[in-house]
Image 1: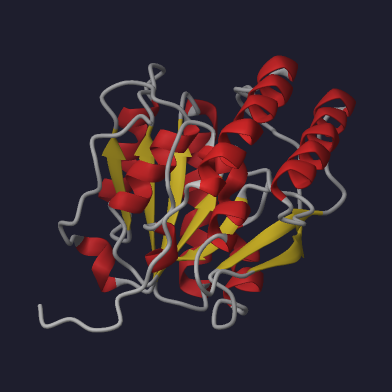
Image 2 (image 1 turned 180 degrees about the vertical axis):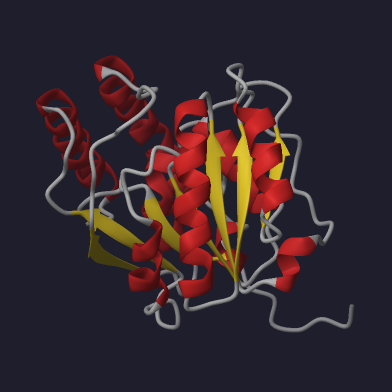
Length: 252
C-alpha cells in the first residue's frame, strides 16, 4: 500500500455535500478543458459540490496549472503527492482528505461527462456506491478487447456481478469509502470492496463516453491485463480475511 495513513483532520470539504476527486498525472493538455467542464457542472449539481484535484507527482507542469485553477475557482481545491504513486494511492489520498457526505471520482481525461454525476447522485439515497456503465465506448479495439477480458476475469474471481468496473465515473458514500482496505490496484475492485461491507450495495447507471482528445493514456495492453489478473488473486486472499464490524454501543 502506498500511503502515509488516514488523515482525520477536517477541512473545507466538510462544508459541501459532495466532493469530486480528480487524480491527475501529466495531463497538462487537458487542464484547461477540465476546469471549464467542472466549473460548468458545479452550479448544476444536485448537491452542493466541490472539486479536489490530486496531483500524482506530475512532471509536466500539471501541478502548477492546477494551483492556478484553484485560485480562480473558489469551489476547487488541490493536494499534491510528493512523487508519482499511482491511481490507487491518489484515490486514497483524495478519500482521506474528503469529509463531505458523498464523494465522486472522474478521470482527468474527461472521457466521461461531469454532468452525468447527476444521474448517479439521484440514487445515492439507496446505494452507497453508484457507478456508470460506459455506453458506446470510444476506445481503440485493443483497449475495448482487453477491458472485456479483464472485466470477465474479475467477475469470475470476485463474484461482484459488475458490468464495467473500469468506468471512471463513480459516486460513493464517504463513510463507506473510508472503510475500504486500500492496496495498489484497489481502484479496479471498488464495487467488490463496497459489497464486503454491511449494507454495501452497488447500482450501475448508463453514462456517456467520449474519445480522449488530448494527452496520452497511462495504460497499455500489459498493465491493463497482467495487473488486474494478479490483483484478482490478491483480492481473493484479502476477502477471506476481511474484518467487518459495527459498534452497537459507545460512551466515547
